[in-house]
Length: 307
Image 1: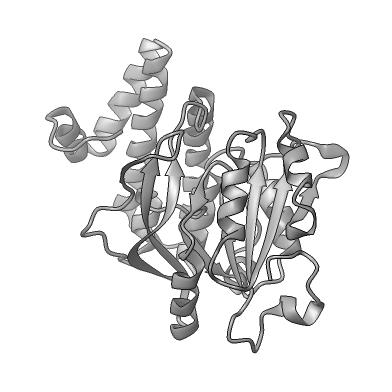
Image 2: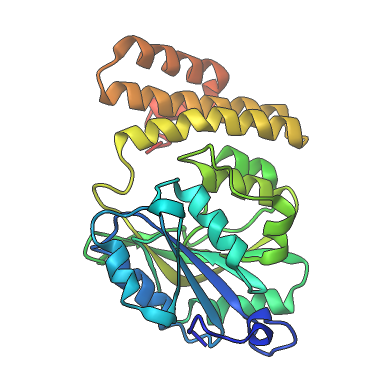
């Protein structure tokens, strides 16, 4: 059922012992990795998969490689083959998703074959759970395992404060979400060209319950152009707006809001240090220390490491 040419009834995924999973892959200039990514979805042991790949204006041959898959995937683009950013690409995919469940996979990462077969039954058994996620591997540019993504004692607290404070999981790659949860949360914020995944995770945590399983089911690739310096700055600047919106939407603890603001200033201090902008670095660093002096002291003393 990996073909894009199912009948409407089979695409609904309702009343079937194998409910349909819609997988959305936003792709932009990933010619080196796209075949491994797509192949990992097409080779899933779960039999009911709708694979939607949204090419976001690639110029490096990614789109041409995707065209070669024919009707094994649903290939979408924006009008004029424009580049609109990952949020717009995912939103386009969501509008075409027919599954009971939705998973998002970044185009440079990949899944292990049993990923969906392990996760779907959990959501089928537990109707109060809206999102299930798992452990996985950090891998290098050649797909070699580096280290586990989650520590062996990781557990899900189901506390929106924890999701807001530290983005400790990935919405792309390791999460499987009920389509109804995305409908309730609303679309990805298209004005964000970074941190849109954390924004959506925060919004989801406010309305649904999460569950964690320790199975190793995905591979998250670490490579030179995965997050550029410019992308990091954009991510943390967007973080301030995400925090502002969250504070107006949900009754977060004051301490959480203060500590998250400290994290953002710390990250901005790192950005400024990398480009030798010493005065802005010192200003952001001082604000981070004032907002969360305990954690700042732990970082300075080497008790805690902020990467």
